[in-house]
Image (cartoon, rainbow, N blue to C red; front, side, top):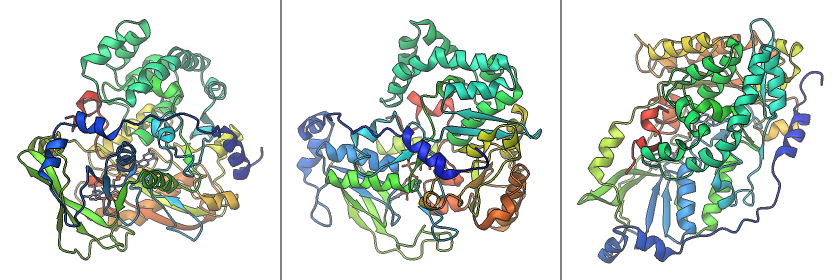
Length: 533
Ligand SMILES: Cc1cc2nc3c(=O)[nH]c(=O)nc-3n(C[C@H](O)[C@H](O)[C@H](O)COP(=O)(O)OP(=O)(O)OC[C@H]3O[C@@H](n4cnc5c(N)ncnc54)[C@H](O)[C@@H]3O)c2cc1C
């Protein structure tokens, strides 16, 4: 296929989407079962605590990001009277798609691609396809153009991935296939269900895994860092770097994070694949709130929860205040301008979490090590990579990693970030090519973004540094990207810079411009999740 034909790719991708009607019968516990199982619920109900509107709620959910919407919908479907407070006008949180450049170019300002779409239970449980959710799964998931004008591509399909790897190392292509075959079933049957279950006791996974050779291998890998695993398994530095790139950009896991080596087989098993929402990531928010409203949940936008009211160690209410509709809607209007007097809205339910314990756990959360800098581009034509001469699939890749010809290149970026220095815009650039409706109507238009992990604070600079240097750093990002795709600069119709400072301006919970709101390190996941009680 000469050049880049987005329409053709979208058509191919649509075939990959599972259009099978959802037939699963969903079981929902009856309300009484929840009440009986929930310590304190009945007691607080007896107290008959009212609210300012005379209504009572079984559950108050704070924040209508996808996590809040999903949790609230499960609870509403179970018959609990549920209300969701969201401080922004729009529901969705990081499912945020906006026309920030030109009309019709709909840019995903936060999440671009969604992993685990096929395997996450809410998709079916909450009937999201019925409520309009449609995804495509790009066949070429990752492209890494190299300084030599060669490239490596990782695909949804194992054979194509191994073919690309074999051009650098036959040994590594075999090692990749072997790891895939060794772990695919194990990850589907053992690991994935655990991802959607309550966190186990630390000893539980050991007990479950130590009985089989695969389980023992998995435990062994979980003692290492991802970098150690790829160095043990693969010979080529190019192959190692391409695999590690997938951990940093979508998952926030840096190659040297000890104890997360088991993520390497998780990626190679290809159980998770990156999907792109048709119409933009915000479409998922639409399907989620449709599902929530159908379950008779209530939602109030432009209401910020200022405080959780604790009485005798139990959460008994929230203090809310209305915020203006334009608060957080755009960078220009990104500051709160007007607050109405607060009102108290108590839920009748006793929280099982002790207030002081929870707040000290929250205080101790270690935030992300890095923030994210983005330049969103409205283009007249898609980037054409020089390295497509070597591997034409480069022009079809969803995520592009530039400047990562070796593992050391990746480590250098994060060393700079840790030292609060600006990395050369080369580490992790991830254009997403097909996230807009405009793209589907006009295949020549693509809205990619260049992104780079950067420090939130820069050594020796004041806190507003990103407001001052954003445009200049965006120039550097575009320059770096254009070295690999020479047509880029002349195709730019308009650009929009989204700096680390803009992240918490839009979503206040993304403190310090963190992408995941907490570091994905071994001491903060699974049984050790910060608010585990
Ligand atoms: C630049 C960037 C790129 C990213 N790219 C990806 C990606 O490609 N793929 C991916 O999977 N993830 C990505 N992420 C991460 C993803 O956006 C988050 O993991 C996700 O948004 C978390 O969802 P959530 O529901 O927990 O929280 P959020 O999406 O942050 O939602 C929380 C909601 O709560 C509201 N809220 C907060 N405090 C209050 C309050 N006191 N009262 C009322 N409402 C409140 C907020 O306004 C917000 O709407 C990216 C993040 C960033 C910043």
